[in-house]
Image 1: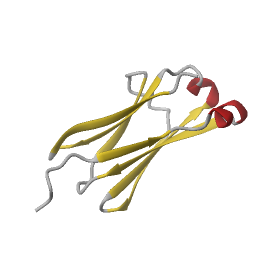
Image 2 (image 1 turned 45 degrees about the horizontal axis):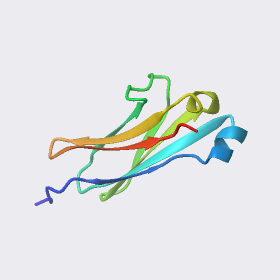
Image 3 (image 1 turned 30 degrees about the vertical axis):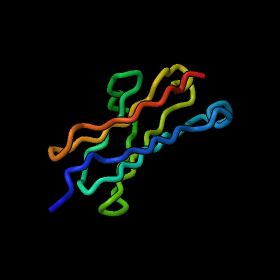
Length: 101
């Protein structure tokens, strides 16, 4: 039987210097869960457009990594970025980072 505990999330955002010097930046969310959770992103509380590339890969059965790549110009206008993990076996869990410079 799988544990019914909620997953832990780690959200890593690009450094300020990276945002200022690169044309694209990537945020990474790592979900540690016994379940194959669906990872989604919110930008300022809204779903990103369908043009925003999101890559999700299960590196192990215990960890799922999702990358969100955005143009630096768009990143600079954001206030918050949220990574959310969803699965029918646990309550939706999310981690939000304030990215406003």
